[in-house]
Length: 573
Image (cartoon, rainbow, N blue to C red):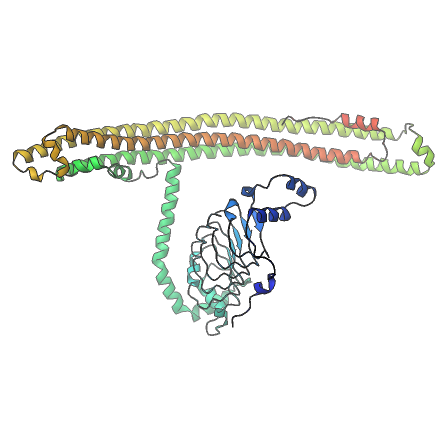
């Protein structure tokens, strides 16, 4: 009889099976979202599912993972305490960083390969029998598989490939009960990157004891994984190189890829090449020339990429310096403002306390009906005037610093845009010159191939070996235009592919410049607006706090309006 799982006691068996739907998602989002007034306002707007990053659907009697693909930017998902028996339909949640499927009825680890951003995975309290299908989650840091039905150590060694893994829990599994193979020592030996097992730090003496006990197993695992690690490193490097070359706009230009693409799905060229060695010799000469040209394009791409990166780094460095200068100037102004604010607050509190003491000595009738000027309020007027003055000066000065920073940044952006466009145009011109040479090489190759094929056909026919002529070329015996037509078809196909690769390089380069410059401009506008609002809210908070000190001693509306009229301002958003 199988052990009863905690999930079976936790789930309300009388509850109807839950189905993940828009209504369930919306309800959970509203319940788990903002509370109070913010929550009321949020409920007035339509829920934008694609903007949700966190959701918990626990204790819902859910039997099947479904409909979650609408949460495109989900980062944290909990489906704990449900009745799920299979991991499915979550491969599109490629932004997911934390997944909790604890206390369900899952029997197999699967369908997780594409969750490459996953850092925390909990499958505690399920029915999993084997550790498997986890070795692609290379960013995984925390893994909990306690209280399952894992009966074999097979699969634990695959966790060695997860270089970021730091915490593992396999407690309350059958493998944890084998006293001849202490699981903690086995884990400490096999997973050198691991720091915590069952949330307890692995001590050096445990690793040493494990190495003595499991040295044979460790040696076998090291030998078996050697070639796989090399292959993984090769794939990682290839992907890294591909990204690097893509950013240089010369991906697939570091070898014969472009040349080979010319003769793929090329029936006209294949027909002409069917004559054999003479045509093959021409093709090899063309390939060598095309390789040299694409190598030039490749080299230009890498050189220009490095130049652009240095220019971007220089720009960012200059902007960072300007922002730090503005921040220092602004902070000095704010610090002065706060010094004056605290000094005036202390002074006002003393005066207000004194006025309150005086008011207690007067009759209640006199206090409620008299509007006579009290000499002590003159000191309050002086404090108010001083505060208004420092407030206005601080606001205008800080805003002026921010506006100057914004203008300098806009000017820097314009200069940077001109520079980066010039660099990109230079890159395009240099590569286009190589594409021109490649088109010329294609034309020379085509002309030479036509001549060789015609000579071959003529010679074979004249020597009485017409049967040696490839079937696709025998029509040339009666129609001399056949060879020219094949050559024209081949040339058009090849030139279209060369033109397409050139267009791709040019369009991607120019799109990159436009997106980069537009992004910088938009980011600066956004930063400026946020800074203006930050300054406004900050100073206005202290303004309100300061004048709140006067509420009990200066109630007349006209005095209140006079106080606030000195510091009114508007911001054009």
